[in-house]
Image (cartoon, rainbow, N blue to C red; front, side):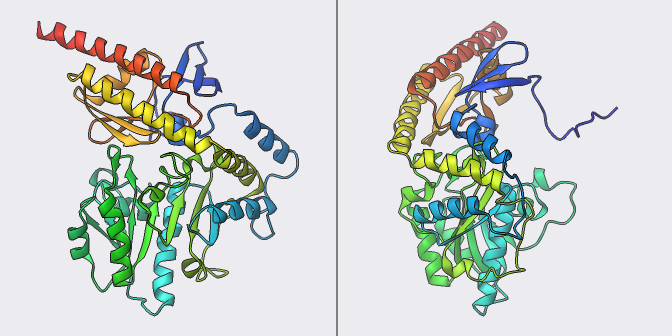
Length: 397
């Protein structure tokens, strides 16, 4: 008989009843170091007192009013995002996939209003992940995700990641824009080349295209800058943000320049829940924390330390880990044994991590994680590697 929750997830047999900082506590009393952070969502960790207080206070006042009325909390959060980014205007929504859908609409709308309605196609990269809606499945282009859902939504062309020459060759008179993740998370923590990212801006300027970055996972401090594209000194026209933006409360956003945003007039786009008072109360706390003195410095320092620790794990256990990847607190270990075996061994040691493509173990802890907790995580990974090596040796014998 089918479970009451649709079987769309391969869930671990774990249920958590509370969390504290970078730790989660299971219903059976076990404690786990959380290096998954709800898939890079719990940016301030678990049970952050400021986040709890803001959500509780706002819930006691008003949770939802719809966008038929002004929402001061949304105006406040949008002003903070604009003042600390390339953007001039913000649209709030509920998820990363919704943000990416809206971003594609903005790209097409911008081209149409500039006199190019024929420009509707978006160039995306192989290995990307842009979401699970029908259009974003097509933008992702992964055959495994598309299977069984009929003909893919038209309008998306794919080129190899980090290959500017191939991308340039893919531009046609129907191309409207380019949508790229600065770091590909789902396909194995693959970081964009500096030359590639800067070349994207040059190509878009040359051909009159819109440059869009999917910062759903890389944004909101994950890489040690507020947005990952800042590492490349590149100014996009529009970006999507979600995951860590509200510390665990469902929320997404689209940030755009005035040129792009000005075409989104009343009736061109909408949302019922997006940017409601409760979500934005949470988002304001996260934004204030990220912008507080030293916070992003902490993410950079801790991320660099974690990267060094992971490199040492590769040297110590070459039969288990072949490569360390990533930037900031968005890291990955390419595994030699099947990834499922490594994840299970890590879980046995009390460490939560996430799978990614290319047999990569993804490590995206809360941004408040300490270096000591990173050392603890790597010690657990080392014990997991030892157990896997012993098992492989026993099987060989």
